[in-house]
Length: 87
Image (cartoon, rainbow, N blue to C red; front, top):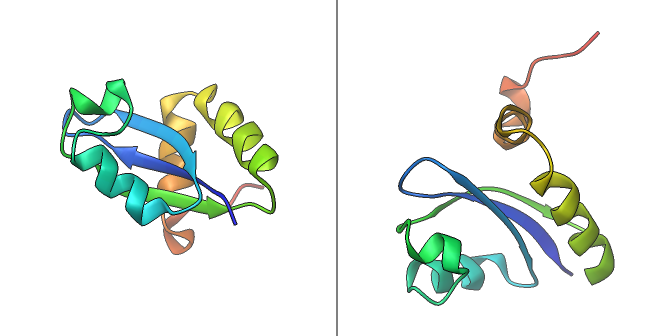
């Protein structure tokens, strides 16, 4: 199953992507074989992953998250017990 993931780069920025094997993808990023964006900001650390039923849905979710403001991405990366309840 495919996943969407977020890594925190060494400069504190966030990078969102999708992969079938998240651990292998993060390892590739840290080996300099990932996205051009992360190659300049190594090392990266996985801060969020979400499994989706299809590759198309993972790609759609990736695009959705990439358009979010940083604050919303950071909220998504927080463990469930630390997220604020709305309402």
